[in-house]
Length: 276
Image 1 (cartoon, one colour):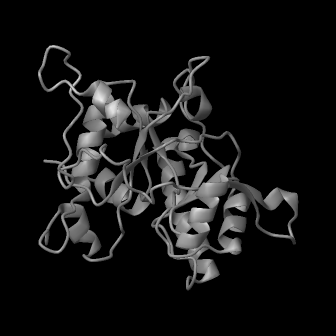
Image 2 (tube, rainbow, N blue to C red):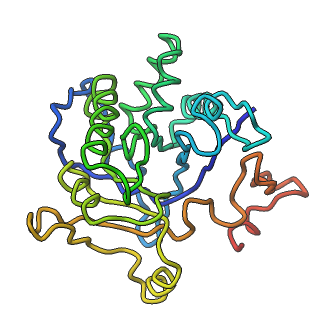
C-alpha cells in the first residue's frame, strides 16, 4: 500500500552549476542532471511531468508517525511507503523520473535498506532517474529561522547526499514550496550554495493573481545588492501550490480515476484526460 503526505507534478528545471562542498565524483559514465533529461521533440511544446515529494518533517504528527504511517486518524501519511514504491517503479522503467526532497526522511529509510536496494538506488541517482532537490534535512521556515540553523541543517543534509551519492546526489534547485512567506536572504543563500533556481508555492493571493495574469510567475530574483549579480537567482512560483494538476492526482487520498490507455477497453480515457 502506498501512502503519501503530498505528491505533485511539475516541470523540472535541471542545472549544472557547482557547489562549495567538495563533491565526490560519481561512477565513470554516469549521466545525471541535464544529460539524463528525455530528448525534446521539435515543433511541439514539450512538457515534463515529474512527481515529487512534499513530506513534512513533523507537523500534525511526529517524524516517526509520518514515516511509519501510524496515527493515520490524524493525517493519512506514511513516508516509507513512498520510497518503497518509487524505487520499485523507477527500477522497472528507465523512462520514469522522481524527485526526492527531504533528506531527513530519506536517510531514515536509507540506513534500513539492504545492500542490494542501496545499490539499485545509487544506480537510479547516477542515471538521473532519482534526483534530490532542496537537499536540506528539512524545508525550513524563512520568517523566524535562525541564520546559522538554516546553514547547519543544509550542511547536514547535503553532506549526507554527497558522502553517499557523490556529484549526482548534489541538488541544483532550492525547493521552498510550503513556507508561508519568503525572504531575500534565503534566496541569497541558495545563490551562494550554487543552486540554479528556486521554486516556491505560497505567496499573497493578490500577488499571485497579478503574476499569473501578467505572466510574471517566472522571474530573476536580485536577492542581495551587497553581493551583486552573482546573487541573482531564477525563481518560479508554482501554479497550483504543490498539488497535482486537477484530475491527475492518482494517490489513494485523491479518488481520481487513473489513465486507461487500452484502446480496446470501454474505460479508455486518454483523449478525455488530455482535453481535460
